[in-house]
Length: 115
Ligand code: SF4
Image 1: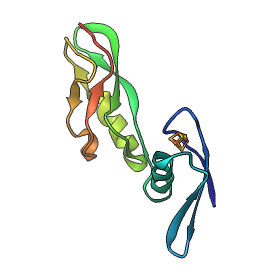
Image 2: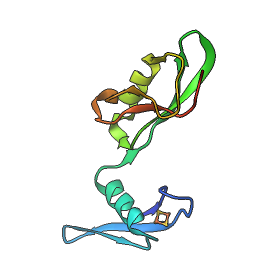
Image 3: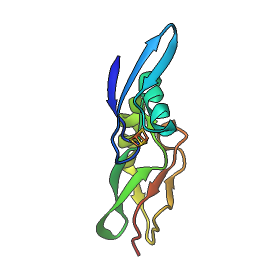
């Protein structure tokens, strides 16, 4: 039995998840999204990666994030690639900086405007 704190919304439900007869059972989740989160945590945990990148000709750092959660085991590779990204002005929140970061199939996007 694993007890998890759901990180999908600010409610932070305490969820119980366990395997029984080859099936994953989830209890005490507040909604379907929490159930899916718990199932993913047991089988293939994922996280949204947030960081900052440099901007060409600008001293301000640009906050970025993955557009969707990436597998936990890919986070190190994602961060290595993020370190090499240099954005070009102007950048708008939501602009895709890398289409397929570290081969995860997930984009790296800007989360702030820099003119
Ligand atoms: S289970 Fe649902 S209501 Fe509870 S924290 Fe997760 S997303 Fe929010």
